[in-house]
Length: 107
Image 1 (cartoon, rainbow, N blue to C red):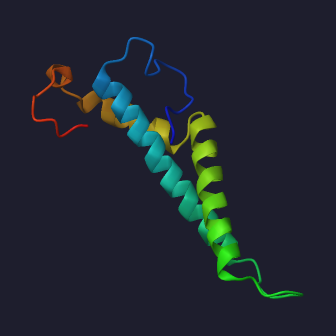
Image 2 (cartoon, rainbow, N blue to C red; image 1 turned 90 degrees about the vertical axis):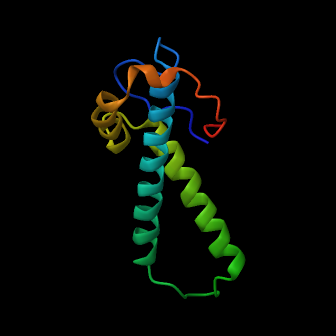
Protein backbone atom coordinates (compact mmCIF):
# COMPACT_ATOMS: atom_id res chain seq x y z
CA UNK A 1 0.00 0.00 0.00
CA UNK A 2 1.29 3.43 -0.85
CA UNK A 3 1.11 6.15 1.80
CA UNK A 4 1.96 9.17 -0.34
CA UNK A 5 3.77 10.16 -3.45
CA UNK A 6 7.09 11.84 -3.05
CA UNK A 7 6.60 15.32 -4.39
CA UNK A 8 7.53 18.87 -3.73
CA UNK A 9 4.87 20.63 -1.72
CA UNK A 10 2.76 19.73 1.25
CA UNK A 11 2.57 16.06 2.09
CA UNK A 12 -0.19 14.33 4.02
CA UNK A 13 1.45 15.19 7.34
CA UNK A 14 2.43 18.78 6.49
CA UNK A 15 -0.80 20.49 7.52
CA UNK A 16 -2.88 19.07 4.67
CA UNK A 17 -6.53 18.31 5.28
CA UNK A 18 -7.84 14.77 5.38
CA UNK A 19 -9.30 15.18 1.91
CA UNK A 20 -5.98 16.42 0.50
CA UNK A 21 -4.14 13.49 2.07
CA UNK A 22 -6.76 11.09 0.73
CA UNK A 23 -6.51 12.64 -2.75
CA UNK A 24 -2.70 12.38 -2.66
CA UNK A 25 -2.94 8.70 -1.71
CA UNK A 26 -5.47 7.95 -4.44
CA UNK A 27 -3.40 9.79 -7.06
CA UNK A 28 -0.40 7.67 -6.08
CA UNK A 29 -2.48 4.51 -6.38
CA UNK A 30 -3.66 5.53 -9.86
CA UNK A 31 -0.03 6.08 -10.85
CA UNK A 32 0.81 2.64 -9.44
CA UNK A 33 -1.93 0.99 -11.51
CA UNK A 34 -0.73 2.84 -14.62
CA UNK A 35 2.85 1.69 -14.04
CA UNK A 36 1.69 -1.87 -13.38
CA UNK A 37 -0.11 -1.94 -16.73
CA UNK A 38 3.00 -0.52 -18.39
CA UNK A 39 5.17 -3.25 -16.83
CA UNK A 40 2.66 -5.88 -17.95
CA UNK A 41 2.80 -4.57 -21.53
CA UNK A 42 6.59 -4.48 -21.45
CA UNK A 43 6.77 -8.03 -20.08
CA UNK A 44 4.49 -9.28 -22.87
CA UNK A 45 7.13 -8.25 -25.43
CA UNK A 46 9.75 -10.59 -23.94
CA UNK A 47 9.88 -13.87 -25.89
CA UNK A 48 8.75 -16.88 -23.89
CA UNK A 49 10.14 -20.37 -24.06
CA UNK A 50 13.68 -21.54 -23.77
CA UNK A 51 15.17 -24.27 -21.64
CA UNK A 52 12.17 -24.66 -19.38
CA UNK A 53 8.52 -23.80 -19.70
CA UNK A 54 7.25 -21.14 -17.34
CA UNK A 55 4.41 -22.47 -15.26
CA UNK A 56 1.41 -20.81 -13.68
CA UNK A 57 3.43 -20.17 -10.51
CA UNK A 58 5.95 -18.07 -12.39
CA UNK A 59 3.17 -16.07 -14.02
CA UNK A 60 1.65 -15.34 -10.61
CA UNK A 61 5.05 -14.43 -9.17
CA UNK A 62 5.93 -12.05 -12.01
CA UNK A 63 2.50 -10.39 -11.74
CA UNK A 64 2.97 -9.84 -8.01
CA UNK A 65 6.53 -8.62 -8.59
CA UNK A 66 5.35 -6.12 -11.20
CA UNK A 67 2.65 -4.88 -8.83
CA UNK A 68 5.14 -4.37 -6.00
CA UNK A 69 7.71 -2.63 -8.20
CA UNK A 70 5.00 -0.36 -9.64
CA UNK A 71 3.81 0.62 -6.14
CA UNK A 72 7.34 1.37 -4.95
CA UNK A 73 8.20 3.30 -8.11
CA UNK A 74 5.00 5.36 -7.88
CA UNK A 75 5.69 6.16 -4.22
CA UNK A 76 9.19 7.40 -5.03
CA UNK A 77 8.32 9.21 -8.24
CA UNK A 78 8.62 12.97 -8.15
CA UNK A 79 6.70 15.05 -10.65
CA UNK A 80 5.09 11.95 -12.10
CA UNK A 81 1.55 11.14 -13.13
CA UNK A 82 0.30 10.93 -9.53
CA UNK A 83 1.67 14.35 -8.67
CA UNK A 84 0.16 15.85 -11.82
CA UNK A 85 -3.23 14.32 -10.98
CA UNK A 86 -3.01 15.63 -7.42
CA UNK A 87 -2.13 19.17 -8.52
CA UNK A 88 -4.97 19.15 -11.05
CA UNK A 89 -7.62 17.81 -8.66
CA UNK A 90 -6.66 19.51 -5.38
CA UNK A 91 -8.03 22.80 -6.68
CA UNK A 92 -11.46 21.19 -6.94
CA UNK A 93 -11.66 20.10 -3.32
CA UNK A 94 -14.37 21.77 -1.30
CA UNK A 95 -12.86 23.28 1.88
CA UNK A 96 -15.98 22.26 3.79
CA UNK A 97 -15.61 18.63 2.66
CA UNK A 98 -13.09 17.92 5.45
CA UNK A 99 -15.95 17.85 7.96
CA UNK A 100 -17.17 14.26 8.54
CA UNK A 101 -20.53 13.65 6.90
CA UNK A 102 -21.61 10.95 9.36
CA UNK A 103 -22.48 8.47 6.60
CA UNK A 104 -19.35 6.35 7.20
CA UNK A 105 -18.91 5.75 3.48
CA UNK A 106 -15.32 7.06 3.40
CA UNK A 107 -13.87 4.34 5.61
